[in-house]
Amino acid sequence: MPTSPIPLITLTTDFGLGDHYVGVMKGVMLKLNPKLQLVDICHQLPSYSVSEAAYTLDAAYSYFPAGTIHLIVVDPGVGSRRRPILAQGGDYYFIAPDNGVLSLVWQREKNPTVIEINSAEYLLPTISSTFQGRDVFAPAAGWLSQGVDPRCFGPLIRDYLALDLPGSKLLKPGVLSGQIIRVDKFGNLITNITAEEFSQFRKQWGHKGFKLQLGRAGIKRLIGYYAQGQTNEACAIIGSSGRLEVVIKQQPADKVLGVGVGQEFSLMAIQ
Image (cartoon, rainbow, N blue to C red; front, top):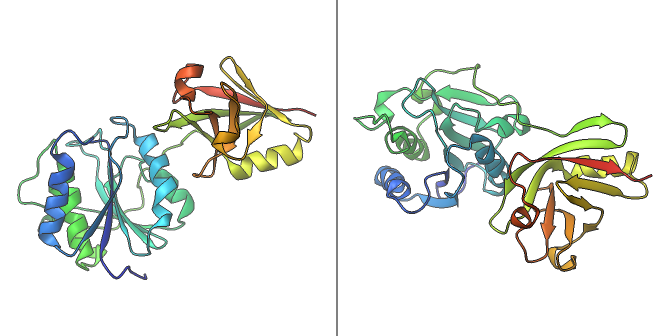
């Protein structure tokens, strides 16, 4: 696998920035490898939301240099029998709990190598039942960045967890159901319909347009950039993550429309 000149580790957690958790994890890794470069992807994910962590990672990980180690700690099962894992998929390494947070990685990176992290040599001497981001995941990432062979961390496994994350569904010809999977800082509503799915839907059925029925909003306009929308107009847009979004110009669409993560909607073709 090609590697970046400087060892690079990204961090994605639901720890927030008001406590010591993220800083301590960085300290553990830097103590093992002072040459590390650390990049924060996100620490403000909703607590315990494995699915939103999966979508966030999916939107970000492939933009980093080959050889990057992606460390993800959204771990509602911390201290339980869930396994810590190290995965190699495509050009990247992933260190995370085996709780489905890598489900979208499994869809993209075929035939990953997945290892259970259980070698005490590469963990801290004392393992907390409440902060394994510090005691298990961070030291594993630090040692991996030093060039330790992934096979040294534990046994190869094949029964890693893959969640059945909600996808779009064709209810009948010309009618697709979808779901809001993420709300960003601006209140934009990110859906589970990809740009490719939306394009194919319009080519097959929506020659004269579409209507996206989300709560009380019936959205019929696709815009090319945020400022193209009219004041108070709910519009559709293909966002930077390659998914269909619902947005309102300079307003939080989630609050204006009164919807959030998990809200279902219908996409109907106008023929």
